Length: 535
Length: 99
Image (cartoon, rainbow over all chains, first blue to last red; front, side, top):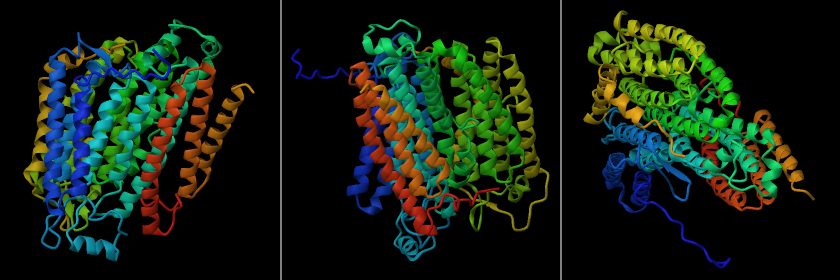
């Protein structure tokens, strides 16, 4: 080959089709924003979003049916992407969560009609100053921010790449592709816009800070191994590099580079997961962001980030297991205990759910620490149970409203069970699933991760986990008691009857919660078939 | 000059940036400090690339520049929006959600 001649890369387009379809749909969404008349953007965007995600889900199912999750697992895209069991399982889950989120984003019956036009929960014109003239003019003109759909699709595309990233470059790019649209989405609430903007500012600054740490860690790992590919780094970590040149010989003995790099990359991923001590952003962002965005973010980001974390720890750094295991033990215990204890004092439903998500990050981490095939599949199962419960819970939060929009203060939820028994019962179901009560998906998930941890000899972690679950159950049950056994207030919130969009989200989430709780075996088998990483 | 010195410089710049994020109060300055951290990582990548004699690190640095540019677009949009609503870009003023 001449030195100037470039070789065309060899890309397995079919194996990468899920993320390509989603990115394609996102780009079509941007084109719609640019060229379609304002009136037709909303239906077109919703159609493109649903069609794209449904297509991506079909592609995931086709790949899994073709054996790509098990026997045909492969490394694609010149070694930079892995198409294997965990990747396909998590991609399917993210696409489903994303599809359901499109429904939540598209809901237009919750807000009272403005100037005769139905509006969604996103600002008419986000650039306008809250309460100013420009905002009023935008509302009068009937503007709506349909850009949320392409932003959502780009975030989903990044999340699809995240768990299949098989080198550090793709890991970083996928992280940014999923984060940047989320920062913007957080800022777009229609009501309580100052809170929403503040949430976006905090999320952005802390998220960018964390990704700078991740990037510096990547630089250290590259310096240690002389390559960014996961397989190459893993070979150097285990002391068997393919070829040693002078540069590699001088760095591969330097454990400081490896340890600092591994720690910083792990830290960046733990930030996305929302584990203690990298959780500071979670409550504020969850509270301030528009509730449909919070639901999507809480469910899908966690799924994607745990996928990337699992692959990093199991494929790149298994040789460092004795170094990272105690650290993750500590992180898991701190997350479970801090999340459960601090949640007790919360008075806002969205903040309460945020702290509960921190505790759940700890529970999932105890499956990660198991370092076994069971560990991987239990994490996969827990994520699928948790993401639908979360999405359902936040969907219910969008429905309880008073004059100022969503009534998120807990005191306003008193007696909700008397006014709208059905809604309160569904919310109680989600809370029981969070608490891990038998016959809900939360129990099956917790049982799976704790069993994996116990099999791996992490009994201490299991004991702390069970105690933290007991503490957490206290405040979940407290909310249920508040809803069903206290008198409704005269000026309490009312429950809005939504369009079939939100109803289907709540119904699907409740159905998944019950089915995964009563008959988890099929899904446990699916997760355990998908529990092996390709190398 | 040996490439190791560039690594020390990169570590120093990264630390300065991290201190800036933690100590400064203006959102724009915090954001500039984050950019400094990203560029410190770039310097480390390029120095390592030279040590190993392959181009992975330099290619990575190009990608980081593109990502940093995208981050500026999103970040400045958010900071300007917050400034217009509050007439302040101080991160201490953004405390509506404190308990």
